[in-house]
Image: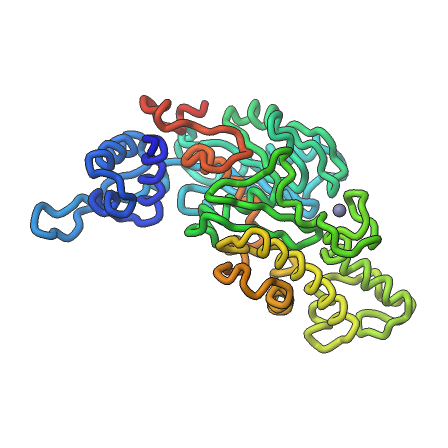
Length: 414
Ligand SMILES: [Zn+2]
């Protein structure tokens, strides 16, 4: 076992099980007590752990208990979404402050970045903390990022191509900046703060205006050979079906996303299908929303029920395929389609209907614990993850605990 790995394991265990003694760490990880003591000494020097009193004696001296120092570092997480920019300041335990505003994506990247600069400044000024403990800023957005240059290659929802967040944010705030796709950021946030804390192999599925996925295998974000792994939204669902945002026809996103459900609803109402959603041939069709369709379905409206059941069936089939293929510990569902009581029930039934009886028998399906803020929290977690664990591939390589033995990580970043 590499020493770096051991040190990260010790830190992770203390983070999860605080307060905990050194003998218990040694037993839990199968690492010798002298090695644990060496690691603990170093982590205390970094300021990442501290003493938290004495435990019960089992005959000899009572053991010194250790706890994770959640205020040892801070990070900023940003979510860029067509609806809003959300900025959160997190410490090792959770959110400390937040600021949000409308996203100016239609005006282009420059005004959006200026607004982001103001929001980050406001968030940092709300809380009193040592600026030297700021690990960095993480930015999550719906789109494809170049794994080497970290530039946003294309964000179809924004209509943006080739945008650099790292240089301006790094210059303005003089800190480390990392970027990532919003679903991959969510996967990282769920690991540190949410539903995947105990999981090692899991799939995050975003079901909202668009559809996407992120895959974590053995604690590593799997991005694939060309960086495109997890694109569940563009798996074929209906051959020759409606045109997708990607240019292909019949993708899952084109037939089962929030935008697809609203498009189908408009078309069917315009065709004259009777429904409480609007008068045949038009009427109030322009004011349709997912919430209205969910409410109508819950009240028994046949068209609304039909639209949602179709989407549930197609999504259920795609998620069942992923379970058949990967047999993960956990599938985490997130996004506007599942943030209600009605949709997840039918979706779970559809997954069970489509998956092989003997596949994924141990796979748990759960909702995101981070809710609508998952990408922003996840972006902050990306920064922490890089520094604290370096486990996930695809994000910039982080600090090596061994290499940085002489100085705290938070300082070594600058
Ligand atoms: Zn597509």
